[in-house]
Image (cartoon, rainbow, N blue to C red; front, side, top):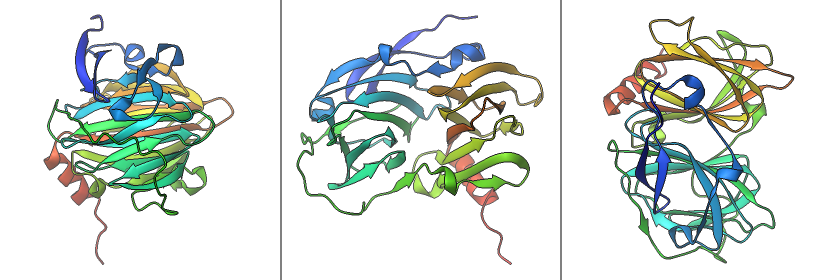
Length: 304
């Protein structure tokens, strides 16, 4: 089994040293755990107010060559991430707990968690914690070109700006009540938060999934679309193996705060244990734009 290897990526406008995940790493090593003790302290992120702390959970290439990172962290009261652009990548900020003033293209509104805000390629964005409580936060990034990311700061902390009562940008609440049963998977409910047409990159969808206690999901094969999962709540196990064997595979425990990358050519399934549902945020990323187009066409509604 190969040891982890270090490399440098561009993240949050700073050079950050993180670990890579080798192709033959054991599943238990690929699963990354949220650990506030490992958060790095940063100040004036993208010229934002105050300070924040974060850690990289999943590094560049953990899912596909277009996947850049998953960050998890905490933004204290009065702090934030300043107004900036990514011209080669798309992001999704997820507020897991608390509320914040979120800006997209210079328009700002309060977004209350749990909610996900998409920041499309070439659109400016910022986040400021105006509340008196810490903001639990994570950020996903997918690039238009493999292994490429960028950032352009606007020098604006977006503090004390006018607020729109209703956001004029895309937000999606992680509301369990809106999840609907899956026809061929008893005990599993889901809701697609963002469709593939939302994204310009090979980013294909964002799903909110609930697995009832004692339920095992059907084996899912990732032929052309890799997935990354973040466990919002609950606990259980995940099985990941080669696509040629949908039954056997490595099995590892998962719990709230875990991030699980599943690559192209693999199969995955989850089992929920304990007394509460296993709640997952699922990010799907196609191998390339052709694979994403094929997915859209295969899932388009049939005309009568």
